[in-house]
Image (cartoon, rainbow, N blue to C red; front, side, top):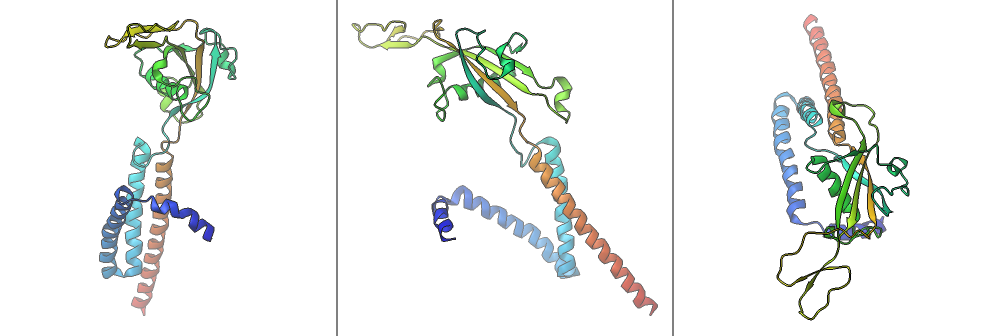
Length: 271
């Protein structure tokens, strides 16, 4: 127990007033004022026990309605959004050389759909590939900056099409491929007597940098990625279902109490 407390001390010192403590107190005060005032009003009129049941049933009913709206529209407290996850980076001599890919479908890209430039899907796919190609967390990243290479082609295969994307049910595997190639290094010469390194584009200091030019001798890097649909609506679904269950249990308790009260009132009246 002592070891756990000692291990938690550094985390406690990292807590700051804004935004952690301020946000926590704002939520706590809001719950106490709104829910507490309602319970206090009901408790002084119908009693503490019955007032709590009525106030709690109202809170759970409101939570059920709010959670249902979050669930339908995918807003509020959401889970992981759909993203592209890199599987592997394949190095080949040209764009058609993907035979070393571990994913069998990626070894032949002739049946894949090419994503044209200007398509919104291409931007999302290429952004995910950039993270894999220049990731600081991975030693397998072949480049240091996004300006060191240029995208050649983007392909996509699998998944659902059309309105079927919005329907629940099993989703087929969805893959994407981004092929990039290194560009020729641009060297800025500050000394007039300085010689240009072989294989590089040299410019004088102060001149406009040239457009990136592909290094035809460099290998083609192919980033293979798989679509992760995430669980965007999972937390709202749990909130809705849990609140609905508690709402039903509380309403059932209120109903049983009303029946018992009516029975007792009938006995006293007949007596």
